[in-house]
Structure formats: C-alpha cells, structure tokens
Image 1 (tube, rainbow, N blue to C red):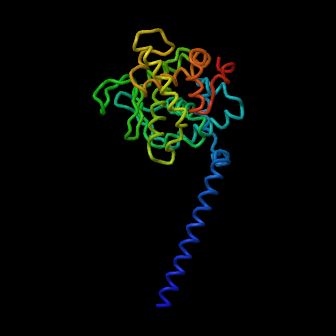
Image 2: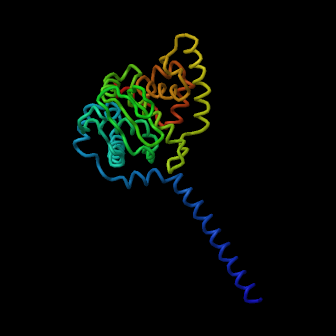
Image 3: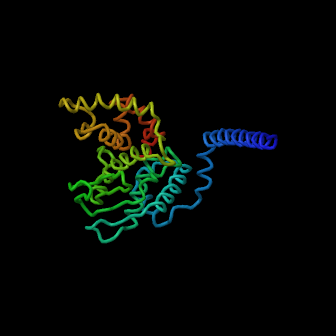
Length: 276
C-alpha cells in the first residue's frame, strides 16, 4: 500500500510540474508572439518576389508603387509567399493562367491583409480565374466573382482588370472579393482565426447600417446601392472605397473610416500623395 501511495504521489507531482511548465510556456509564447511575433515572421520570409512578378506589380499595381521603400520590400515578400501557398486554376473559358493574373490577384490579396503580417487567407488554397462573367457551379447564377466557404475564390479576369483600371471610382472586383474572403477567414477556426478587432467590427457594422438605411431609403450617400444588400456586402463595398477613395471616405464618415483603419491596421490616406 505504501508503494502504491508513493507512486500516486510521485505521479501527482509530475503532473503538477508538467502543468506548471506548460502554463509558463504558454504565457512566454503568447508574450513573445504579441511583442515580437510579427517581426520574426518578416525575418523568416526571405524569398524575394520573382522578377517576372515584380516587374508586373511595379508597373501595374498603384498600391505597391505608393508604399515607402521599406514597406514595399515587405509587401513583395508577402506577395511571393502568397503565390507559393495558392493554386491558380483556369476556368472553363480560359486557356491558361498568366503571370499577370497571378501577380495582380496575389498583390490585391496582400494589399487588404498587409496590416496583418501573418495572415495569408490560408483557408483559400485555390483561386479560379475565368475570362469573363461565368456561371457558378455553387449557385447556378452568373457571377463576376465569388468566395466559397469550401476554400476557393473565383474571379472574372475581365471584371478584375476593369476594377483595377480606375483607382478613383470605388469599384474594384479584386478588393471586393478579397474583402469577403477576409471575413470568412476571420470566422474559420484555423491558425488565422479571429484576427479582426471585434469591437471595431461591431462598431463598423452599427455605423454601416445607418448608411445602408440611407441607401434603402433612396437618399444620396457616398456608397453605391449594392452596399445595402447585406452587412457583408456593405463591408466589401466599404473596403473598395477605403483603398480607392480614402480621403473622400473619411470626409463622408470619419467614424466609419476610423473603424476600418482599426480593423485593417493600415491607413490609405497616408499613401494618398504617392497614390495619385
């Protein structure tokens, strides 16, 4: 009996020591991650952007051009990381995926996630590109783009290019669909789960519904009518305007703009001079 009691006591001590060690480790890991995690992430992402992709975004992606030099280098590394983590697939009306498609679609995803160094929309491992408007297998309807919770993003290349061609109209299919992907990613229980600031999102939704009510009532507003479809669609429309018309957005509704800055951890108004 004494032997059994001693064994039980020893096992209890071991269990306590293991739990204490685990708790200390968890606290240390959380503290390290909070203060230094992002910095170390950038250190370990060392692969420079392939020259063929760099040439494309340098010439055709205004957001990249507007970034200061030190941030531009980080942006390029993140684009390369994003490209390597996704499978780009042609839709039924497209012969092949081009380097331009890969570079510009990836840069758009990185633009919207740039405030979060370790967010790469990991839930979405496939990106389908169609030549034009396509009929969705999921809905049976015709779309310019869609985000599917099953893990893929689909885009009409014609619509994507049209949205990128005018940086001042607040209409950008790439930003719109990546905004939907961002919200889905935030809700999926994976390593990127729940990264958006909850309080900011709640306040944004509350303020956004006032704008949606104005749209529904037929009153003039800064945002296009499609934004009144749902909270999710308003978020996507707001992101289009956040990046393409930040000064006008802030002038129209500074509260809403401030919440978006808080959620995305970046402020396009600081790039306005270089953007134009």
